[in-house]
Length: 156
Ligand SMILES: Nc1ncnc2c1ncn2[C@@H]1O[C@H](COP(=O)(O)OP(=O)(O)OP(=O)(O)O)[C@@H](O)[C@H]1O
Ligand SMILES: [Mg+2]
Figure 1 (cartoon, rainbow, N blue to C red):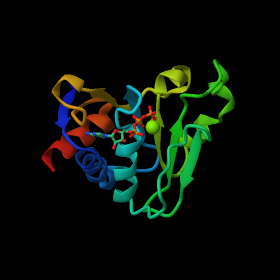
Figure 2: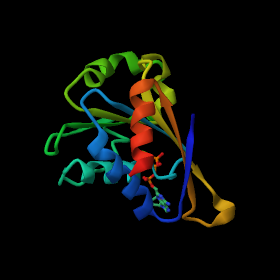
Figure 3: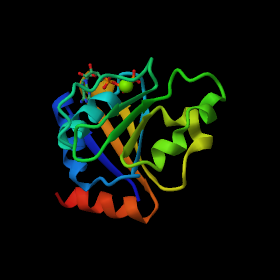
Figure 4: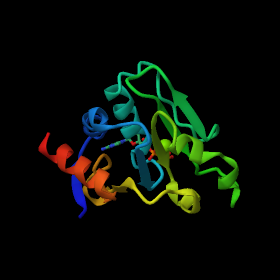
C-alpha cells in the first residue's frame, strides 16, 4: 500500500508533518527521500512544530544529526547526504533508532545497510511541469505499525 498526496505550498507540506506528529512514538523511524530542495527539511519543521518543539529546526546537512529535546518526545533529525561512503556504521544510528525519540532521516539511501525492517518512507518529488511549488509525497509504510499510522493519518 502506498498513498500519494499532492501539495502546492511549503505550508501544506509542513501541515502534513504537523498532523503526523501526534501519532508518533519513541523508536518510530521516518525516512525522507527525494530530490534536493524537494521539501524534506520543510516537512520536518512541521513535524517538529507538531511535537511542540519551539527551537528552530535547521538542516543537519553538515552536522549529520541534530537532537531536539524540548517537545513531547525527542526528535533525532538526520541528514546523511554528506556521509563518507560506507561510514554509516560509525554514526551509531542504532542508538538513535532504539532511543527515546522519533528518528527522521533525510537521504536514507546512504545508510540503507543500517536501517531496521520497519519504517515509514516518504518519497518527495518535485512536479516542475506543474509549477515550482508543486510536490508529490508518496507514503510507503513498511511493517504493521506504520501501515496503521498511515491509516490514522488519512482519517484525520
Ligand atoms: N510544496 C512545497 N513543499 C515544500 N517545500 C517547498 C514547496 N514549494 C516550495 N518549497 C520550497 O522548496 C525548498 C525546500 O527546501 P528543503 O530544505 O525543505 O528541501 P530538502 O528536501 O530538505 O533538500 P535537501 O535535500 O537539500 O536537504 C524550500 O525553500 C521551500 O520553501
Ligand atoms: Mg534537507
